[in-house]
Length: 446
Image (cartoon, rainbow, N blue to C red; front, side, top):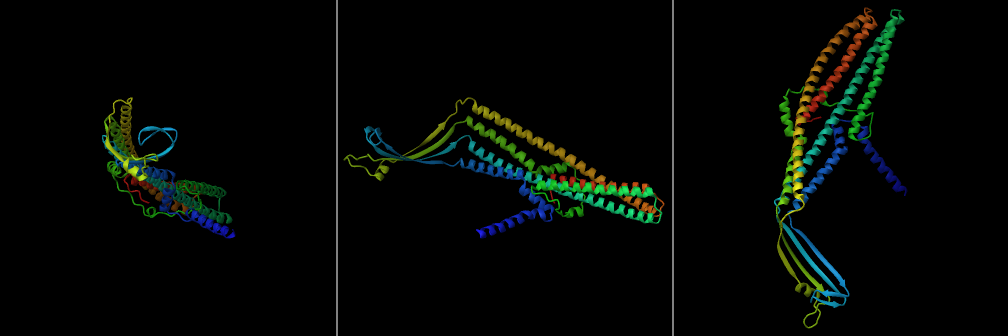
């Protein structure tokens, strides 16, 4: 018992460590995407649906094969019964056995089965595209969430640099105050700025935590606030996207996006469903064949001797085969109603495909416009930051020389700090929109 407990404890320890491996180690963007794809509920549901549609397709194919069934019937009869051997009534107890094997195969059903095979194949392929679309959507969401964590961390680092800068000036004023050269209002203004920087850091640390919570929720794993995210190379060396027309992007998206392929396949499937229901207007022709034999313990020959079991099976053996034609005449308008509903569903699927494509075009127009605006804002903001840095270089000289008061100095310092934060936001806004455009072009990379 003690050994079992020790083994169980060791196994549990290994299992816990394996579980913690995904939440305690450093994270790469690729790893986060893989975890999300593995754990996401919608993706798993789409995978199950795809497997189910595959089974339906296999079943539809099997409908073309002959249907074969066998039967065995053993009975004990007592009282007044008909003896199957001589077709006369007798009052006695006897046993009887019947054996049969039958088969049937469809010959003509207005291509109903073949259209069903095509429909289930379209449904299966559509479900595969649905699965891929779910994966793409989750991948895009994880990328955006991951980059947002880095965005918030960059802002936090900037706030910390602001605090260091303010603290350096505070130290300078303290030195001047020790020599009696600092103005009281300058010291008060600088202390207020220092407190403001510290408050900004606290608020930004909370923003980083919120961003991590969002990311870990997408991965469907326990939140690890202390997780370290590696910075992708694409952020170190940002490549400006080439200018492409909306029509070019839209054309590529029609060829590459799973959501478009899924909608088109669902539309084709809906029209196959119309043909399947129309087949019920036509006759159904089927070929059937069977073999059967029987045995009873009361069977006797002309001399009164009982006939053996195997001899009876051989003597009573019989076969049959024939054609069966089922002609629909009237079934309460059921077929007509089914066809009408199928046509409605087909029209709905056509409308859905058109809507998906129209929404895609609108989203691409917006994403392209947002990306252009974000790039322009980022470039202009960089110019503003450069200008304010030069202004602060001059202000530093003046302030340290006592030629500028703290109020004017802090006004210019605040302008630079706000401009730097805005620059970070504009940079990531452009990256976000670039990723979305890449997704529409079928090139969603890490």
